Image 1: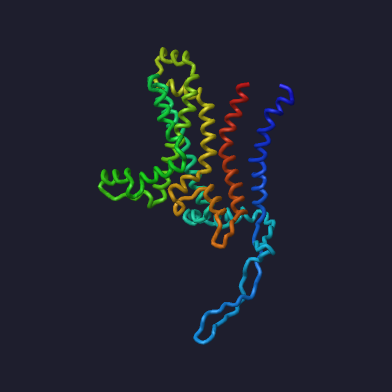
Image 2 (image 1 turned 30 degrees about the horizontal axis):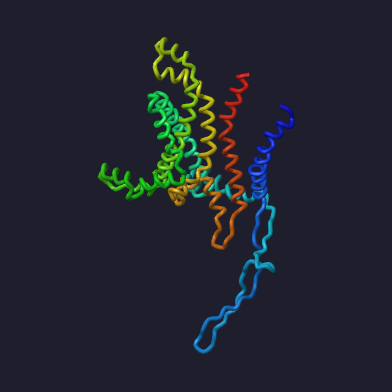
Length: 340
């Protein structure tokens, strides 16, 4: 392939990546070191209230945002270095809580509270998604050809449903008067409140994520099962290998590149968990790093947004994703080198 043909194929992709990924990333990184605030001025303000004979007027000095000739608030941008990261991480308070062994104090810091849940959510759902996906793929592969198509369609339904709708469906099923909650109350003969504690909400979030993502893993593993060497499987059967031994020594090693691929996709996706927080309305108990960025960008009562903190939190989230991807990328790189 000559240079012009190569550039014609790669150029549009590179341009789109620069436009939608590289430039916004550079902008967020830059904004994490700057703080933009409105300029305030102190003015004399007279407030009059009706009196018995005459008005009663009080003059006081108030602070208000300074406006330009168009009525817009005048702002100033100031370089603050790593201060936004310090405001998000609160390292002195976090270190003091760790030194005292006070988990309760550490969990009151939003970033560490969100990091604890995000890591727990990511690392617990990962093996469940891979295991359930592999199990569904094997069931589809062993199903009769006449029903294999409908089984694949039904298996994919949870992945087709819009995430927000899926979260709300699970939410409504387990709410106080939800169908499944009513069934459990009837079965156990006692009242159940699944949304009254953080750990039960986290369990429901993990249940939804596994239910939603496992079909994607299943369809990827099912495609991989079509390429398993049948001669190796038949030889193993002749040698007396059990079904578990064939799965462990032939099928799983063959699917390992796909397992790593699904794991990497899931790590990147679940570390940015957001829909579950909004759909379950769990902000009072459980928050995630992605939701924390959204919270910083939400205007406060004065209409101000913490863009600098949101940028710093976004950069810390991306660093977390990169750290999680080191092991699978290292495994992929080692396998690639071994294959050559």
